Figure 1 (cartoon, rainbow, N blue to C red):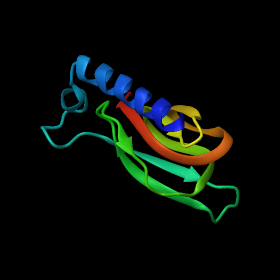
Figure 2 (cartoon, helix red, strand yellow):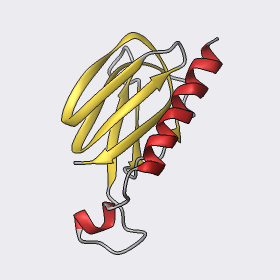
Figure 3 (cartoon, rainbow, N blue to C red):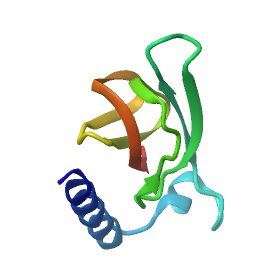
Length: 115
């Protein structure tokens, strides 16, 4: 059931992303291939348990392969992102903020767009 739910969410998000106009490069004044990448920190239960990823912001879903159970997601700003957990959590961050993941769990995918 989990796999079906996550797969369904990714199909839906892919369809939305394909329907939206791709103006990322124009918004940020860069040429093709220079899209803004959001800096996202995935924090576990202890201060030493974390990892950071530079993620795409072109409304295309991406996978997260680190198995760490995540309690908080922190964004350095510049993007709106939604992340999907292995146990069906959906966590969104907007701009520079830190949000709780409830209940804590491994994050398996996400999708971001520039602000």
